[in-house]
Length: 509
Image (cartoon, rainbow, N blue to C red):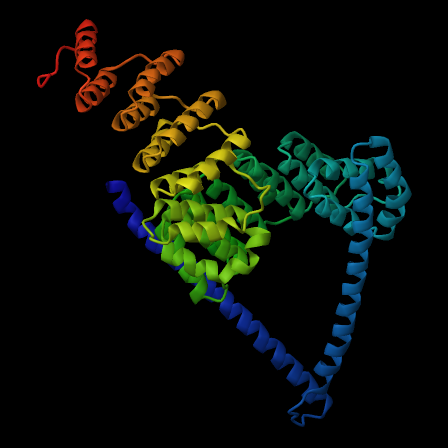
């Protein structure tokens, strides 16, 4: 209790820091715009001998040249990306043949990498091979061994490769590349940031902090907001919220202005720690300040609201981002389905089915299929439940929890579908699903209620085959059926068996 009390002032302090950072950023941005406009105006007045001018000419002329240069740069960059795309496609076509892979790099890559000696083509290639990081590192390894003598490596190339190695969980390689770049006098803030990112991907907070301290001691490099964002992210992933907030205070003390990524990493950290109040507080500060929420922010908030079960706010955010869901948000769609399945929303089945249509057919998740089985079972939608069960059998999905099995048989019981239940139990036995007495007891009760006593008795043999002993409840089910249908001889036989097993005779027997 005392720990929670002490945290209340900290929460107000963090909110003040976030608000002040946002206000400082807004003042800096507006001040820069005014100052630049004032300088241009004074310069034009000086050329005109002090005469005022309502339409300064030179800034307009300068902007024309700036636009042309920007457009030319854009065309050059686009051309480079297209050339790299062609190379990527050829490399992917021969990804399984190391000899041909290297031959393509020798025939196509040498000229391309020399043409863009600043390393931009290599960085772009690594980016375009992001989905196949193993091939990306293979291409990078060839580049640094074959071309470094004539086209020296750049810090940006090493930085990108270090990040790729981190995504592959190969932190030793990431550290090796960092050391190699350092030995070549290529140390830069981006290089340190890349190694910190590699450690971040692998949850190595201590090593990440160690690299950060090395960066602060480096004479030629200084931490940037990107550096601090990485720290906030790694602490957030590990739910080290106190460390995350201490990093934010350091940013504020150093007068480093946060960017949208800073807030996004804060929100992500609070979501991981299930600190919903802090999530919403940070989001409100963004909306009120100059650093406005963007797509990533809204996707994070969608995930947060889904996990916290705040359906109204979840649906509100979804309306903002649903146009981007196909590209970025399939995991979020699954989170929304989970949220609806746990809710009391009367239209949840319809809403879940609408969301399911957004998920590609080949993007199958066993746990999501089980959620659908339970959803339809609780809603007594027997056909839909069996469709999901058939999908699970088809995909070799095994249900291993008693709760799910009882949920299924309860639906069969309420729908009085004993033959369908019998078929399900038989298939579940063969597929290795969780087997429990409830499956067989439910069959016995339903057979007994329909006076199908021979089939009810046959269930006892089925229980024996799966090594389930007869329990007191089993005898009670038999007694109830025989009493209901006047089978007195069998009734007394069961009473005798109960005595034999030490259960005694029921008081109303």
